[in-house]
Image (cartoon, rainbow, N blue to C red; front, side):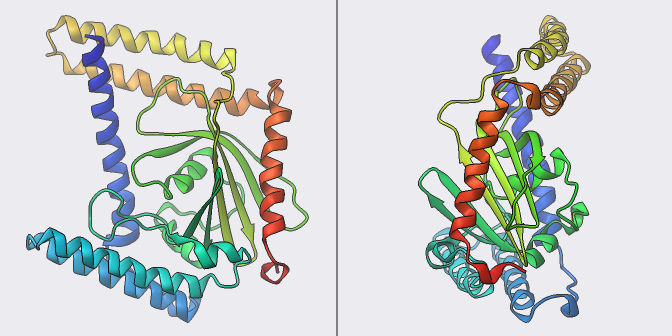
Length: 314
C-alpha cells in the first residue's frame, strides 16, 4: 500500500504540474499575442513575431499527424533561428560568454513537454547555470501573471520565474531576501528545490535573480548536500501531514472508493507543504546555517559582477 500511495501522489502531482505548466505555456506562447510595437525594440518585436509564427506552424502540423522525424528536425532548425536572434538582442547584456556560447532556453516549439519556457540564453558554467534575457522579453512572458516589476516579488512569484527555466519540474522558493549590490539595481538571493512532487524535502538549490539595466540574469546552483532541515519546520509539516495520512487510511479502508477522503488527503498534504515553506521564510534568518548560506549566495553575485561589463549598467 505504501507503493500505491507513492504512485498516487506522483500521479496527482504530475497532473497538477502538467496542467499548470500547460496553462502558463498557453498564456505566454500559444494564444495570439497583441504586441505594442511602440514599447518593444524592433529586434524583440521581430523575435516574438517569428517565435509565435513558429508556434502556430507546429500547432498546425501537430494536428495533421505530420511525420515526427521531419517535425523534430524542423523544430531544431527553428530553435537555431531564434537562438541567433537572441544573440543579437542580448549582445550588450554584459556576460560575453553567454552571448557567445549560451544556448537558447527554449526546448520545444511543439506543444508537448518542454514547450512554453522563458525566452533567453542559458549557459552551464561548472556548477552554475546562468540565464540571461532582456527585461522586455521577461515582462512580456510574465504579463499574464501580472509581473511588471522586479520589486517586492513574493516567494510564489519567484518560484514561478525560476520554474520558467525548467522543462520537466517546478521550482519552489523556501526563503528569499534582497541582496545589496553596488552594481545592480535589484538582487534576490533564494534557497529552494526543483521537483515534480511536494513533500518534506529540504532546500538543495540556490537561486539568484538580478536586474541589470535592460537585462535580467537568473543563476541557479544545485547543492551537492541539501541545507539541513529546520527542526521547527519539520515538526510543523509532520503535525499536518499525519492528518493527510489518516485520510489516506480512510481511502484505503474504502477499497479505494472514497474519493472525498483521497481529495482531503492531497489537500492536507498541500497545506503541510505550504506551511513547511512558510516556516523557512519566517525562521531561516535565525538559523545557524544562515550566515554560511548568505555568504555563498553573495559569492555567486560577486562572480556575476566580475563577469559583467560596465557598459550594460545604466
